[in-house]
Length: 192
Length: 319
Image (tube, rainbow over all chains, first blue to last red; front, side, top):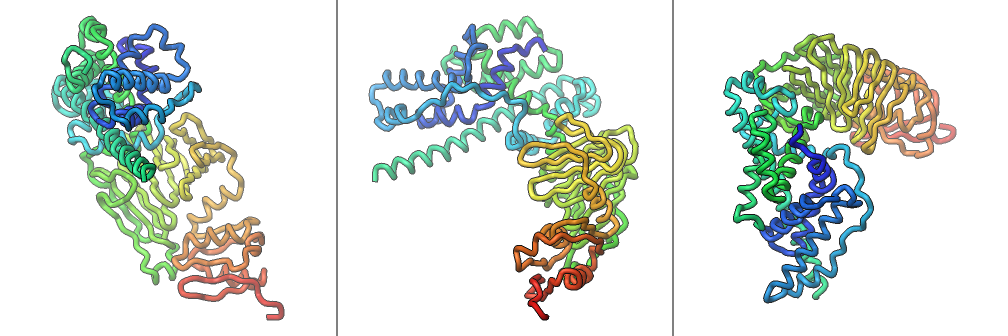
């Protein structure tokens, strides 16, 4: 799998593993789903321009700092700075640079999310994905088992992957909304 | 997006297509590298797709999802097995082939067969390959035999006698999962804990560790400990299958907890200090009265019925 580079594995283990937390952080700064997503994507892209990514002690905290700096830039450019945003920036501490623990495997809650998303897939899509990924059949064998062409297998797999990626987004959004509500509640309490 | 007008959604779509094409060996490697080099947004979108893709290859997923199989539901037989207590029957204990769905916690979908026992009930199930599963009281299991032989224990306890077969036998439960060789095994779930005992044969846990005959794995609070099984654990695992419950110096508190697994109306210890009393002996699961009589004769522990509970207390002096 030459197409999977070290940086991809590093990214999966140390950055994307904390994707939901990262999104929640961006959301707490920007209070807008699209803007938050944009900032997260920009921060991720910046990681892929780094020469010395291996030297970063805590890649998750590093990512949060990029997001914070991007948010600050944005607020400075904006004509009207919302006061609560400025306040949020000062309140939110980025975690320490302690090295992130090596994640050998997903925990069961995350696994369960993947399983849940797979259960919700259309059956043929799920069948293709299960045969390829869990039973480990070669694409040709999957095609044979399902009695379809290899290119149809590919189509199923692309859709399955998109389905899962969207499930990750949806899951994040649900958590974001809950988090924002908690924030608003906390603010109201402070003001009263 | 901060990149050439392409929306995030389009990029994610492209990344997913590249990834699957690479996985299936149909991608032009140079064209892919050129695409990836175009922008760090491309590289990042691809890495995100790869991370999600990787999550689908986790071996443990096999036990968590189901996919419809074209296979007839296996036959269950030997309805109700020995050991049904009178109380259990009176209490309306049930035994049902649940058929499809309905078993909470798992993603119930076509292709699995389910079985359950009520409190006080045990039953024996012949699996499609001739292997055998014995369910202890208050247990829920399911199985699916296709390319692999898969057996799930959701609740309670089951003893498995696995027959040799080319297809791997996978045992799944929330706290632990293992591939079993032919042999005899006992898995008991207590809350979130799991205790897997190998009576004969071998087991390989999904974490990679191996268990030989006479060993047990205890999964507790996220970690798994492997040890030689104490003699009382080994004998308890065979005793329940004969409808017996064995106490070898077990503190009364634990002995009662064991007995209560089989009783719809529970025994309650009134005197906490009585719980330390150690007792030995073998009793019939379906005959708690004998147990209560033995406590009275041997330990001066009396009992009285209160509602559906049985209260144990120290006999007053001179009684």
